[in-house]
Length: 469
Image 1: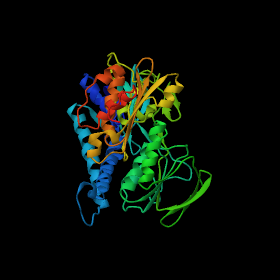
Image 2 (image 1 turned 90 degrees about the horizontal axis):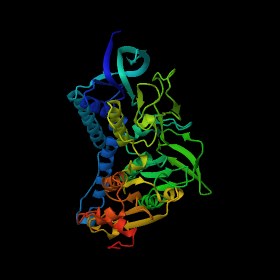
Image 3 (image 1 turned 60 degrees about the horizontal axis):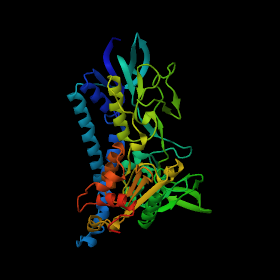
Image 4 (image 1 turned 135 degrees about the vertical axis):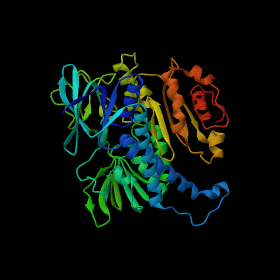
């Protein structure tokens, strides 16, 4: 098979891969993307985007059932689940098509198939592309970026069956609304699905093996989230151990040990959300210097694998497993390949967002981790109940928390729970990236009335200067 030559080939067309290819083209490199399924990857087609469309629908459903608080009344409020799901799929389809347009606009060649390393041709790397086991193309490139992402972790006894036990895929396209649901795992994915189904009327139980939900978040924020979810009617079992699962004709029975008690549960459906594993199989890594640790490819600060000409980005390269991290790595990696000076990504400057109700967002160190690292800290807190815009919106439930180094004024971390905090966290991300201290943040003027004023007050509160609480 004749070889098609490129400067760069990206294996995987997700948020890291397609962005890397576009940036390469902008820098004058001849680039190609190899994608076996849908452009945009899991994030755009089965993750970030369609779940947000579903969550938006569930927020509307929640508001429709609380119209009285705003002086409205409506009779016979209901939803059409199939239309809700259809809209979610249409949003994903529209954006996937948009990625294809962007790649074409930037003259990036797209190959439909699976890519695998196939040795060398002098100083160039070879990559074979196959589809349904048949050869599609043989590509030659100076550099190859692996961006194959990750998939849901499957635990023994919790294998998705498409009917009773769901992975994220089945959970996004339900044919009917379950009356009761068990969510195993309380990370961002599990909590977002729990929030969606609870807001749509299902009885939801969340089971977490650790001692608190959302374990990567600040403990105070986790506790507030727990309280909010229970208030909404969720059952949350932490420090839990799951017993054997028994499948019925249209339900699942199991026991859960938590808090010194055994809970017997029977639910319509189970969602398994217990983490992810990297897609490292069948990439042709054998015989290379590429190292795989815990299903993820090990890389340096610029995403280099140690094998000349081979890089890895995104979920494949390990945590944090976030689309925006993958995209940023894609740009950084390509610019390094192009010989530009790059700044390695500081993981502590990557924000995390969970789009449940109430929303959760954070960046940097938690209060506990800051103390463990040896910092003397100053902590500021400001509740949404002291914010005029939050009260006017009917969203008084929330908190902004800041963690500063008591000696230098460095913003070590920021943690938020409440309405629209996923849109606000970037202010603190910019502050950390720009190495701003409490001095600059205190002098920053925030617009009124906005929920973002709570961010300013949380800074002032760390120095005993909060004005509205």
